[in-house]
Length: 119
Image 1 (cartoon, one colour):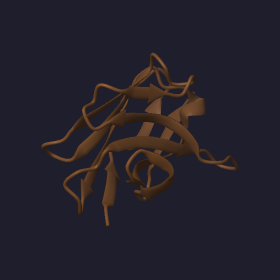
Image 2 (cartoon, one colour):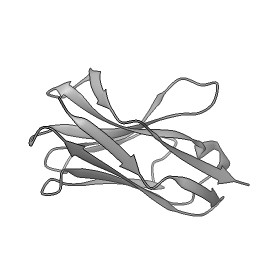
Image 3 (cartoon, helix red, strand yellow):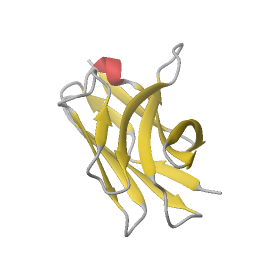
Image 4 (tube, helix red, strand yellow):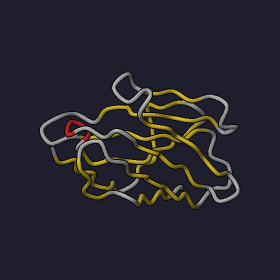
């Protein structure tokens, strides 16, 4: 079992920045980690993910150039630096990790952290 705990959400004005962090416990090796988000009335959507080495990163089109994902394997953490935030980035952000290898169809999930961007 893997436990994921997010932190760093909050309220910020449009154009501002926030940094989300996720601490993983329960397993020393987690091949990939990532972030998803869910806005009110919408389905959960992919935001970004990163490989174990940190060399492979993927971003959704709507955050490319604004968000940066990183990880610290020594601390078993993954972070999401969010810059140039927009009101449409308002959502609950979830940390996630595949249960098996890099198969993202079956994941561990954190409890979520609220990000609110005011206009």
